Amino acid sequence: MKRIWLTAALAAALPGIAGAQVTGGSQSSTPTTGDVSAGPYGSGTTDANSVGVSGGGAATAANGGTATTDSRAKLNPNAAHQRSVATARDEDERARSMTNTHVRKDGDVRSRSMSIYKERGEKPVIDRESTVTNADGTTTTR
Amino acid sequence: MAPPSLRLTSMAIPLLLVLAAAAADSPSGTCRQTLIHADGRIETSVVADDGAGASASSRSAGQGHASSSVSASSSSGEGSSASSSSSSDGTSRSVSVTRDADGCRIMIDERPR
Image (cartoon, rainbow over the protein chains, first blue to last red):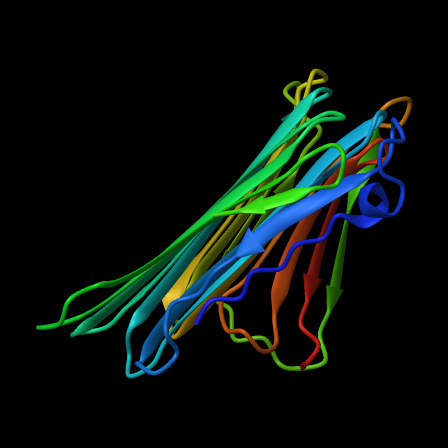
């Protein structure tokens, strides 16, 4: 149900070297067994000279349901933030997923994702994931 | 600032009723694209740069499928760039708006996938 991908690119290969590029991110998705599903993703990268984020989301609703996605990114020379929300619903199912990624220049890449799937009459299925990729290339996942 | 360019690649007959594309070098430096399809699906992409930072947003809504993506980056000496894209049928059409040092660029890609 959940796929988490993490990359500590050059920072992992060159630990301790100032200016090494750090890349991290996360993605999540709701169960694909129903008629609706939603899955956003986000990633960020930074080094001593640059900062960047990217992300998005996809939502699918079968049987005439509705799907929406909303993705936003914002940055200044020292930090970047990205947020994506994907929602799908039909008459008796709802799926909603969201991802937030925050990057500080030459610092950490923090990303967290959450997904909620709810079928009428059933308990919601909630999935959360939080990752932090430090400047030295180490990644912590909760 | 270079004028915005609009490229429409149409390998399939488009079903959209209204295409409202506005890419202007406004004082705030905003590029905006709204695509309204015949079946009610709406895709919106906005990219802005105020000199101190950049932002991008993308929204897609409709029946069946929706997807959107954004990216923004800033590099010392090279300034910032941002782009956003959206698709509401998942198979054949996407809209992307990019803003960088060259100005606004809007692309509507209708190639079958």
